[in-house]
Amino acid sequence: MTIENADTPQQPSSEELSNLNHNELRLAANARFAANALDEALPLYSLAVEVVRHRIATENHEDTAAENNENDDANDSDDSVDYPAELIIQLCNRSACLYKMEMYTEAKDDAAEAVELTDGQNPKALFRLARSLLALGEYDGAIETVERALLYCEGQLLNNNANNEDHEEREQTTSSSLAAQQNEFQKLLNIAKRKKQQQAKSSSNNNNNTAASPAQDEDIQSIKLEPRTPSIREFLRPSKVDDNYHPLGEGNFSTVVICQHKSTSETFALKIIEKEQCAKLAKRQHPNVHNEVMMERRILTQ
Image (tube, rainbow, N blue to C red; front, side, top):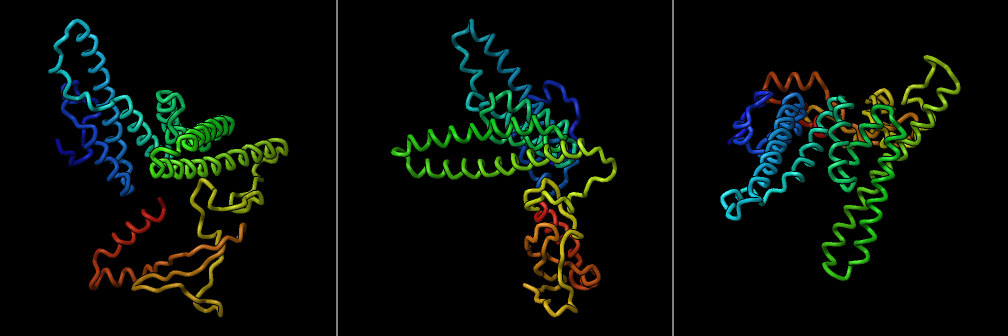
């Protein structure tokens, strides 16, 4: 079955679920998610979750029936698929989509189920859960989840180091991946601890409506670690009339310049798109320019 659109019934029958392919649903949902078409991705992710749940329930029923039947080879066509593991993947994917749609409670629920199914042994599920808890302001839960993930990564790294004599190249790749995950979890832990401190400080001061904005918070060490998209107003950038205006590059409708974050003094490359020039190109020889701009924006904001 080929997935062509997101107009799938919300409550398909058991027979319809049996005929759907969870891999095709996941790939179709991932494509819409990558295109930032979240309203289309979410129902596909949800349908994929239901398909896998149905397959697990069907397998459990068949296993029970097969206990009294030694010749059950006809029911082994799907034995190569680990559906419980597939359910974890689907839950993590839907959690990521829900998080991006700012449906943090639902994202937390999916991630928490994935963590429970893996007994806390899946870094991706732990990351999804910690991030959702952080967004909901549940800082203690986020800190506990991240610390659990860090312990898991440390244990895996120790196991890899102990077995590095065999399959050395594969172990080095795995260790590199675990170290990268460990770094991301450490960033998340720092954010959660800082947010918890800010919350406690705000409560003790009891200053309603006087809290500093994120861009003005003196505790921010790096805007890269903030779980939000910074505003353009937070940056200093040269204009074309300034003496220090030296663009890094120029195109048909855009210019790349160096900018500086006001609070952290971090430097970044900023791409400025001229709307008027885009409109002129769209009217003349480049009618798809607006689509290209939107595609590039989606990629850069991932």
